[in-house]
Length: 309
Image (cartoon, rainbow, N blue to C red; front, top):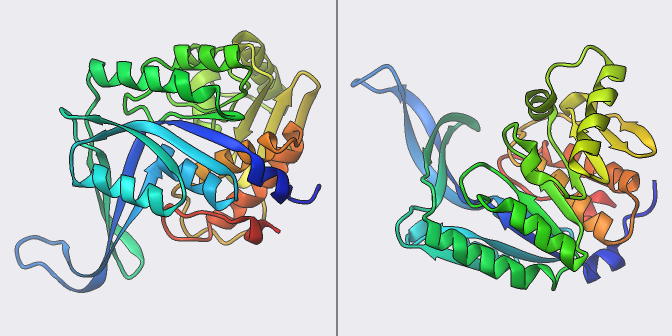
């Protein structure tokens, strides 16, 4: 595998557009059961907020040494302000469209003895005016970057993703997409999409064997006009499909502690190494290594260039 191209990565400008969220963690101790209901009582000892969703992708891009920009929607609330603060601390150039009518997407997790006991989600869709503002900003920002990453968590920020991809193509900027759902025609014209195993099955159906998977994957790639399609397959590794054929890399052996955000790390690493000039498969090899590192950490975490090297 080629050395990690740290110098070229540091010159790369990557724009992330998508669904921004805040990951909130409450850590505590559990030593009794509630007398009100058969549930554990958690005595909270520590609280931590982390960037989630598209913001976590940008956070990973910055941690790898590239120049990261982030575009998305937040509400006029405490969680939105926290995202702006955390993005600034991470060295991300954040362009946050504030929607006065929505609450920032927030995922709150309660953990006792390092085990997740409960997750509470706060989320609602954006209004049309905010989406128009987002689209206008994206047209201006795309042309000033080397790579566009689309991080789709189906929270509504990418309602006009077709126009976003078209603007990037017009500007000659490659587009990497982490897809959601099964209507992949929305991503037509992207450079690559990176579904996981379950998302790929939702899009093309169950495959009988590797030959059947290749037939379905290449059919989808050609239908959408993609340069490449990457299927991330957890313990089975990653499989890349291009016009040249199929290339596979096995998963890095790693004790899995938490898979939260692993897809974000893979996407970020793929983006920065590709922007730095690596071909698709060499970029996949580095993304696979980064994914193997991050699953050994708790919660939405990042991988640095130093850890990869």
